[in-house]
Amino acid sequence: ERAPSSVRAAMEAVVALIMNSPSGSEQQLADQLASREEELVSLMSGGAALDSMLERLDTCRHGVGIAYLLRAQSRASPCDCGLSRRLASWLTGAEARQVQVAGRAVTGMVRSAAEAACVQPMPAALLAGQAAVLAAEKLSSGGGDELTPAHTDALMCLVYAKAYHAAVRLADKTLLTRVASRQLSEQTAGSIATISVAEAHSGTRPHRRAPRESSTVVTVQPADLVRYLYYAGLAYCGEHRFVEAAHHLRMCTTVPATCASAVSIAAYKRLVLCNLLARIAPAAALPKYASAAMARHIAKRGTAPLCAYAELATAVESDDLDAVAKILADQAFDRDGTRGLADQVPDAARRRLVHKLALAYVNIPVAAVADRLALPPRDARNLLVDMIARNQLRAKIDADDLRFLPTHEEHGKAHHLHSHLRHLDRLANKLHTMAEHVATNPNLLFKAHRNHASDDPHNNIPDLTPSALLLPDATSVTLTFP
Image 1 (tube, rainbow, N blue to C red):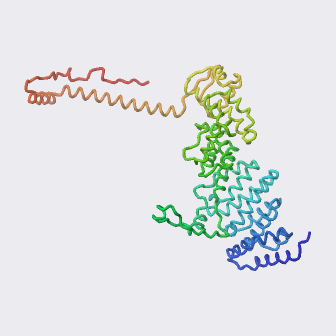
Image 2 (tube, one colour; image 1 turned 180 degrees about the vertical axis):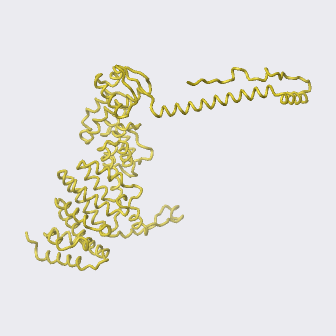
Image 3 (cartoon, rainbow, N blue to C red; image 1 turned 30 degrees about the vertical axis):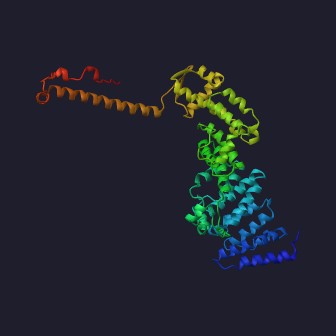
């Protein structure tokens, strides 16, 4: 359908503004287009032909203008299936400087594309995730390792598309210690002020003028950080890296907050399961530095949907495999979308129990291990063989017996203890030799006798014979080593 003439005329004026913008004035153009964003959205909603306008613009010269046109289109048509394709095409040809100048428009586009793609089939989410990765790399001043809102959307799309390897690669590269520090400092530099002593004692707070928000500065909001940690944890779960997954989910759960968010609660449920899979105890306990709001919510788990997770953690830590199987039959794991992780808990609980047996036994029949694991003997043997093959257990199966072998750490401790015992043996022999030398040296005997005679008015001369001065045999230490 052809757009009205007024819409076409207005869009022609916008295109002319972009094309006539002099080189090096991208910032001024971004400020002008940002102030006219609502107008551009209304024009796009009125039927303006975006593709015909993009054909007249060059990505290298007019990259900032194209970004604001795409942002207006994403707001006018949030469910546009071609938005991810246009965004990826523009990001491929645009320079990093142009992407950073149009930073807020780019992050808005990436968010719209991600939200639209995650309700479509997986290929659409994968395309949106690739576009978000490109945006994150060009928005970040550190070559992609500085956290931006685009990182959060990229992880969301890649996790939805089950591209866990790509998501983990992005999470491994991102440094949380550099959370858009440059942009945040630019925005808040003018708003930092000190409170006088009188104001502090009176409890009054002076009026602070809100900082002027730039049209191009990209800031990481607390919600972006929480969602990033949550999706990074899911990505590590998909790659079976449960230690890293538990680390990110724990940070997501303990982010300072005044109330428990839905993301933090979902992260806590997965944190309990990851702790069980990674053998991190206690699995259901929150760190002491968690927010009071989150701690209060977890404390109410007896009446909340968190009860099943706490009971599962208790059953695994008490090695009650029958209770584990009974708890996993609860439908709460299906409702929460954690069934995949929960189904891996019984196998992890059995492996955990085998490691406990290795601490208590040197040899144990395989049939006894099978009884403890609540498995048929053949399945128990297969589990032990798999643990030995994965270097999760140092043991050897001889006929029907399982013989545990000392680990490398135990070998190191034994060698360390052996060296200390040798040192003590040398020290004991040296002390015995010194005692013999003192007891048989004539000069020392005469000096000791003279000093004692001058100090003793009754002339009670002690027995200074060598046999009296020698250490008794019971004090000598003799160690025999193989």
